[in-house]
Amino acid sequence: MAEEIRAEMVANVWKVVASAGDTVSEGDTLVILESMKMEIPVIAESAGVVRQLVVNEGDVVQDGDLIAVIG
Image (tube, rainbow, N blue to C red; front, side, top):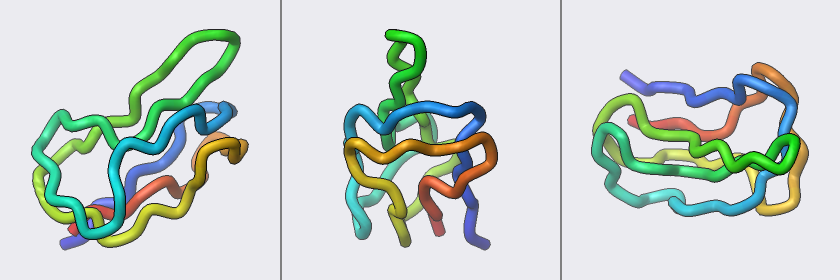
């Protein structure tokens, strides 16, 4: 079953750490967001393979926007 990783706030995508096809473990950082000069890591909540990564560095995400799909 695929897990959708969504933004929890409005933020800029500062750094993309993972790529589609990467195998990740629970707790691995996928993307680092920046909001109000704070860096917020977006982590995998379960182990699996990154099926889709829909953000790029410099993108702006809104609360609830899809960031990645892990399957």
